[in-house]
Length: 190
Image 1 (cartoon, rainbow, N blue to C red):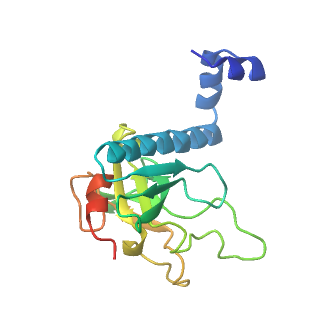
Image 2 (cartoon, rainbow, N blue to C red):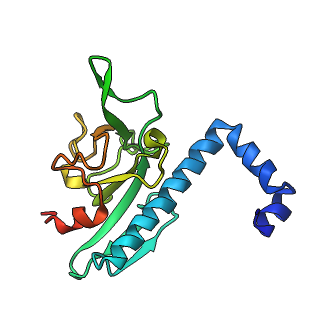
């Protein structure tokens, strides 16, 4: 069922809108980003239900992380950025076998005044949530890491590296990545 607003705004049925999205690469990339953000919201809601988070805010604003969460310890407020793993043909391989996924942590555009502006600063968010849906076809599959544990850019130490290794399965936590937000928050981030 297509929301009435979309139908009247674009003059297309739900099927026509979905077909238009499916035929266009950039529209699919945008849609996949939105799907990952909604799925991240479900993980955050589950963490609220578990008592690990007392409240959260969703942000749809350029230059600002996707969510802010508050833990029961009022001093612990975290900004959370959501990313998708890279497409199915991109991964870390060893002997031809995929051993880890890739996630890209850089912005789409660069400011004319600052060539490093495309890279995320290490202080722009505290938690990275990575949706594994492109690989697993289950868009609720996520792994989570504290930004402080992610690799830094080789030439710009105040920025995050562009690519990061992500475990194949959330259960393969390696000390950096966790298969649940609740598990990550139970770890001391300092």
